[in-house]
Amino acid sequence: MFSSPDALPLADRLISLRHALHREPELGLDLPRTQAKVLAALEGLPLEITRGRGLSSVTAVLRGGRPGPAVLLRGDMDALPVQEESGVAYASEIPGRMHACGHDVHTAGLVGAAHLLAGRREELAGDVVLMFQPGEEGQGGAKIMIDEGVLDAAGSRVVAAYAVHVAATALPLGLIATRAGTMLAASDTVTVTVTGRGGHGSSPHLAVDPVPALCAMVTALQTVVTRTVDAFDPAVVTVGSIHAGSAANIIPESGTLEITVRSFSAATHRAIRAGIERTLRGVADAHGVRVEIDYREDYPVTVNDPGEADFALRTARAAVGEQRVFVAPRPLAASEDFSFVLDQVPGAYLTLGAVPPGTDPATAPMNHAPQAVFDDRAVTETAVLLASLAAARLQEGAA
Image 1 (tube, rainbow, N blue to C red):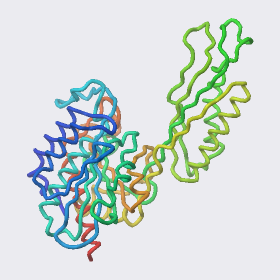
Image 2 (cartoon, rainbow, N blue to C red):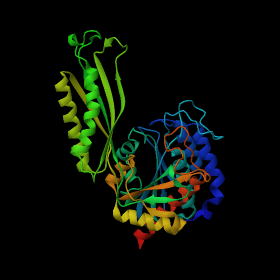
Image 3 (tube, rainbow, N blue to C red):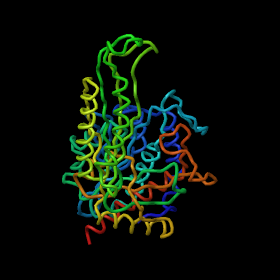
Image 4 (tube, helix red, strand yellow):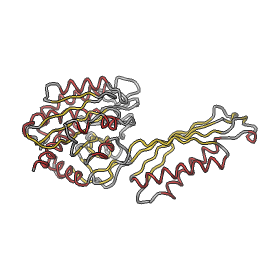
């Protein structure tokens, strides 16, 4: 087990790494500068390191001094296409890119966990797989790393996996939350193209206007939620983008909708997809237009194994104190590609508060906002929590 004093000698180094990552954010699956910084920060540790083939990942295996199973710790590394407005001294130096979701904290925290665990390597009853992952923000980097063998990197399938995600809002600095069962929603993206027949705005009867059909689809989709889905197993359907036309007096040939869908169980996930597709086709038929539906299932539901969630809560309380750890009362509607890992092996996903003291968590800018700020101290908090989870889980497996 580790505690905050264990990480103090690493604090300056880890925070400097976090700032360096924050200044040079990279997007998607190709993160060469980020990968280089991680490799440099791990240099000198007794790790077996593998770089990804299809992405700029780093997989590092730490062999324990005693025999036992392997566990996995994940840290995601990619940033977002956001213009930073945080005002911090180490703000992004690349226009239109920002670590607005705290992945720089996760990466530096996982490096810290590697150092903490390496310092007690001889005490570990098994191995630790460190998963430094690109492409969490929509590119499915976890799935690619799984296909490349990250879950078996130690020579056998890991018996448990853990990830920690910082929150820029809601949770004060250092508070930790998780829960058994559904932790995060499934996430789907739907692109809808409606095609009619263009014409002059003065004579709509001579055209087939896609705009009324698009508008009818937006309102009809809300009924899909209220009349298809169990109120106690909810779904969220949001039309985030609607485009059609180029001038007031032109009836366009076509238009598009872009939709995000969130659901919290496999059953609702199936029902909401069927309802959306049925509704879109029905509205299109009623308006005499053609519709093309590109329904992409991005991330499944993130489900914490009940036993691993209970273990994670016990371990966090032992590491940071009872008063800083609580059971999350409900899932979050955000999504995560750590869900692909938890589909394969039992584990738990935890949330860590990173709101700076003096900022009201209720009004602080949320993750993904241009103004989002994550307190530097969350780096060492993440390191201690991840290292404690790995060490305690290996000890429990050896008992």
